[in-house]
Length: 65
Image (cartoon, rainbow, N blue to C red; front, side, top):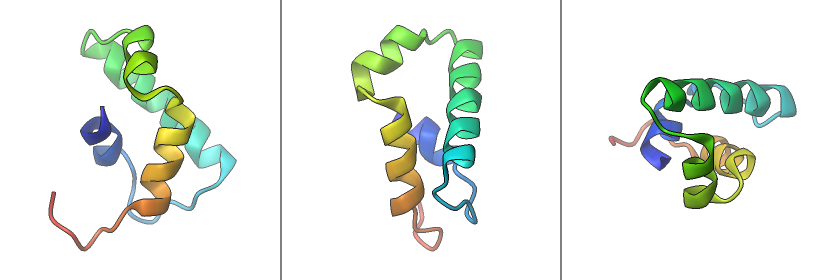
């Protein structure tokens, strides 16, 4: 889940409500396309919104994966 979130966080994204909300919807859609149910995501990360917000705040585009 963390890798999926990290791969979807644009380098220049600011931590604002709109970008987090858009990324949340995109992540849910991408997960659904992979056969991952929303309940599985919630079990793994608790708060998807918080996980994405943390990924935006802590992203370091200069570091390799």
